[in-house]
Length: 516
View 1 (spheres, rainbow, N blue to C red):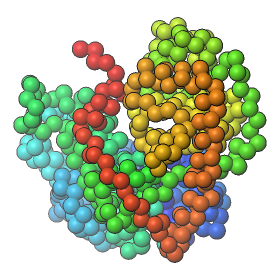
View 2: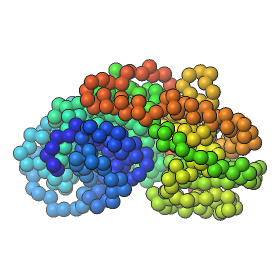
View 3: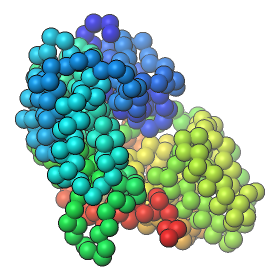
View 4: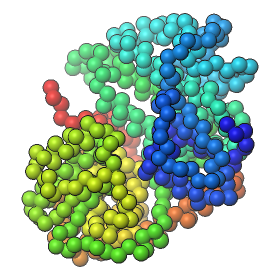
């Protein structure tokens, strides 16, 4: 660590500087747009293994501190038994109860230590093993102890890792999610007294809940028969309680708590955020980046593109199935999936197999990672089939080029395409989730009506310039970082709670048909 104090310490989990796109690209753009400020970055990663940086931090980033959540086996240093027991019980209590005062006590006790232990010293202590064994017998006696042990080691070890990691000195701390990044922001607030605030591009807790439902091994340990209410806990309860506790600890200290659109502010409130702290700052793009784009579209063979990673959450399989239906009715249409295929190799292979099964090998291209500026002139319609989105920038980028979008009703897709005021013209078509037939019908409507396609594209172009220009968004963050002004509090339109059944439906869609 440099020891220098930065203006802003940004805390990010599993993204910058290791990956490109999404939150990492947004953060790079934000830092670059504020050259008068200095930044430090805490990059949280899975383990101690070296991880390649795919983003080069700009000059105003004075340091990047990498924090691994798990660690290789090591011979632990001896800890006073009373200290190991005290820390272990506080860790478990916070995981179970999520009370902010427990986290404050834990932070204070660790900060007061003259010699901070390594996370492995605590997690490998006899006292910690005794605490976990006792909790297992009381709460999860029917679960696999092997699975329980490693789950708690991941959850509590990660918690301890962020509470003991080097903390850069900064005037303000900005976390880009709850979870482990949010816990580090909470620690910074408790330990330094400096301001901490949160920007959630998606709702981290909901994303973890979906993953927990997908993880079949978590629930395989208990036979509940046909009972709707489970009398015994399984490991899903353990993981869910942990991430709920971690989110609560973050929401407790952050102000403002920023979402990209109003509906997600409402979700944050249901998850425990104080309403008086809720703010909305949308994502934006630089429309001028696309001003020189000259159309190279082929009117005889229109191109339909999905821009996104080939991973389950993007539901590429629905796009492939929709492409098959469109091709049968409109054989001249071409399709492309523009995004990396190496993040989930098994899923990418499944997608390739589906293309072959449907006989679409000559119809759908997978060019991999591309420069979108090079491709936008060729695209006639942008498609998303994602199971979860926050505010997808690709809709705005396509809109800046006069390209309409077809997208499911997730995240802010409806707001981007239909506007946020009643009666606004539409810049594309919203479809149902996991619905190849609806996606295909929307695409065929636009393919068969070029004038409609063009008019919707111009609606999107005007909306991007009016509401999503990056320069105005940067100014809002500049004022927050300087302490001069917060973004105005937005009126949040109420929306019904996200029912657990909906999350389960999404999880099932990602997982695919049961093989049983």
